Length: 497
Image 1 (cartoon, rainbow, N blue to C red):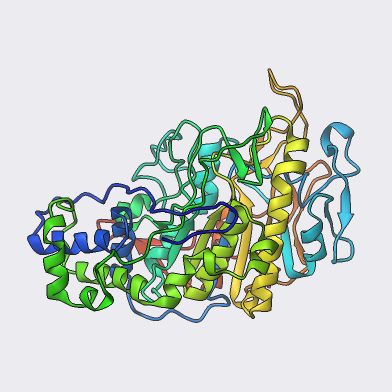
Image 2 (cartoon, rainbow, N blue to C red):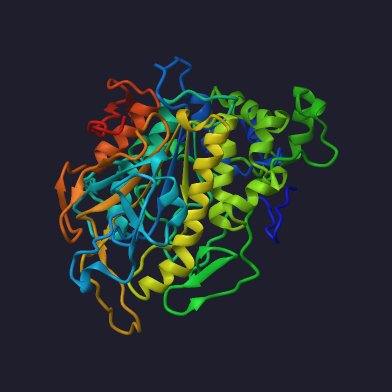
């Protein structure tokens, strides 16, 4: 089992349900499904491997980027307190923080993002992204799927198979695999509300559950804790918190004791070893291509380079310190390693449970717990990719489900003020993959409420990601009835490249 420095331990992620099937399950299928379990992958990974096996091998046109890292700040990053400060607005709108100059003349960002300010020549800012929802669930669905409208029958309380597929799910379905790895991975966890429900928009939706992206669940969910644990763990109302049970969990990808690589690669020996486990996996889906799922699982174990991508214990201590020894830093460092391993799209959720939802105590919480680890980790990611010659071929995108209201308010029962939900305008950071460093696309009005020029929609952001990965405008995904649906619903953001 892998281990992390700084008291971060790892263990297998919790299993999730496999996609149901109306077909019977043969003994051969059950044995092969058991192979994945015995090889250290939970049954929750079967779906991802199935999608991997079904991915067509037809090569795609070469894109500007080999990989995309989509950093998602669940809860809603304030545009005023990050990349679009409004120092000339009235006090009740401009807030407590001051702007600071960046390495790009004329561009200023929040004073609590000093490292990103030094690196503005490496990224572009879009200050005019807008959509119609002020609801967390609806806005998550919008920004994770790249679709401004909500699907018919949308339920904010649970994901449904009528939801639109997420950007990660689409990428996983239409991109070819590299190194026997799934084309798209989401880490370090699903986005889960404090009530325990997974937020809609993260899954395969209309493509079917077998097209859910591969969730690399390595960060535990807790209903009351937020932030980059263990260094920046806090609660919105009470401030700093401690919890020894929060641990960063890497996937368990080692061979079980007594099972050598030779035995893994020996079909008869593997069959005999797994005979007793077949009943447990009786719900495995009957599929003529299931051998490919097993083969992909075996590849994860027998390819040392791929295996190391999931192991932070072998990371350079210097870079561990640069990223920060906390969940934000570990997640982005693992994302960089997965880029090197050959993953096409990695979605990194920096903060579960709507961590960035700063209704109350917004200024101390942003200053002390949220902006510092994000500033540090994202800056380190840009430097790390650049130093390895990977930034030009890796598009980095960072955004939230929405921005925050122009006016500062105090909610009932809160001691300190914050800002409410606001889909009208948010700022998005993009770097690498051919993006012009220092560019500023669009602008918000004088109080940061709505776009004043070059308004962008989530469809444009999704199209920017797909184009960078080389997907042609004719690219399609297919639903379970084999009906085609266009990947593109908008045009890539103009002026970025």
